[in-house]
Amino acid sequence: MTLGAIRISTITPAGGAHDWRWTLAHDVPDHLLIWTTRGQGRLLLHGTRRGVGAHNAIFVPAGDLFALDLSRQSIGLIATIPVGTEVRLPQTPRQLRLRDSGPISELTALLDAAQREAAAQRSLTQDALDGYMALVSVWLRRQMALDDHLPKKPNGAARLSARFCERVARHHANGMSVAEHAEELGVTGTHLARACKAATGHTAAELLGQRILHAARCALVDTTVPMQDIARHLGFGSAAYFTRYIQTQTGKTPSQLRKSATLRSA
Image (cartoon, rainbow, N blue to C red; front, side, top):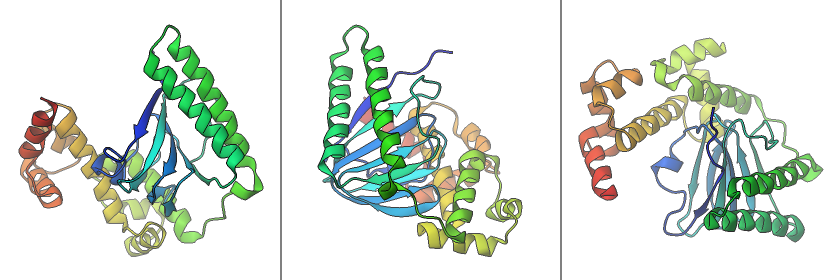
């Protein structure tokens, strides 16, 4: 199997993490390290919602449900690291809030150098990026081990919300209802809704709906898969129900979303 390339992208005021691809709860097939150097926002990670500010390092393992809503003034970098790389990475999602200038300067320098390397596209660029990401991973694991960055023990609501978010990432496309997820988790639907609301600010139904909507919009704007096939894949009973759902959530029909994406890319 051929691995994808390590990529370094930029969070900028003109194109920051504030559109639906980021703000809707979703998961991605690669590991992400998000480094914010300016701005603020909100983060959904590991079943809880928390604030984001300048000099936050956010590690999102592949397949973990998350959402990021940053202000348009935000600036930062995102490292995308394919699963299967030899770079040794943490196994759990974490958010580190940095205050000391030493670690801040160290991570900024490593990511800036990696970004320059990626932009130059010289020979052995991916080997160089592997090296930079290995150093970034060492930095990350060292910081995670410090007492100042040890996570607080989650309460019952946060633990249940995290378990539900894990299920949403894996099973959002199989048509299961929140009540069915709750039964699998051994709780009532009402208890699950309250726990998710307390931990994330969203009910369980809202989190599941966001993940389905994200998948639907990606399929509509990034592929040419027929709409009825998208509807069937995401567990909708019919293409008509899928159309009504998309129009209610976005104000546009699936055809309109697909057409507008085509016009922007033309």
